[in-house]
Image 1 (cartoon, rainbow, N blue to C red):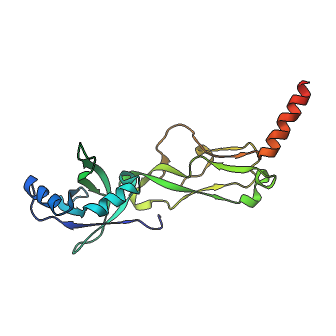
Image 2: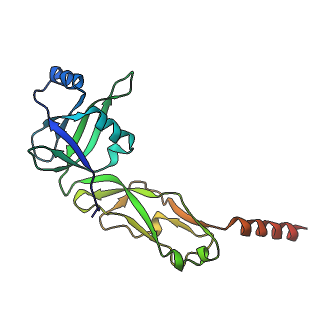
Image 3: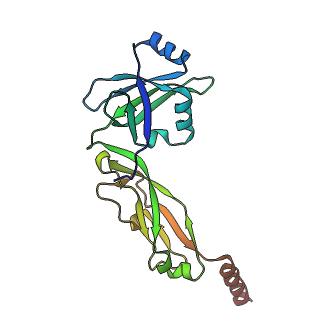
Length: 204
């Protein structure tokens, strides 16, 4: 399970329709709606500056959130859309979808590399080059993995680690069909230079 699901704080919006939404914006709020999960849609407001900060953190639409509304039970949600002002590109409305524990969603999961000391390639001075510090996986909402673990034991200089080389948590699968690269162990610059010199001498 994921170690910690970030909170998303909102409040119930009184009134619905365009008039109520405009009033919310005048008060420095961004109107929104929470739907799905077998419950009735709920009109909400979110503080404008608070939402803007969350958006700037990145990947707002691909994170699982713990929605907190005063007087209500916390609920897991994922954002399905943020409407923006066509001129200023600032948020004007958001749609949040409640998730059941059995719902499948796409989320970015961190990659952790272990057993650096058992990798001959790193002991020889090779450098671990990480191309994907996190990977987007399709996962079950009730069983979100905290991380993907890549074992470096036995890895040599020149080894390339693909997603297919990694044992993924049960029920998780990559959103990209191809066997993409996660990391590689590159030769140290000094060694690379020596190899180039040797190749030049052989050619002579």
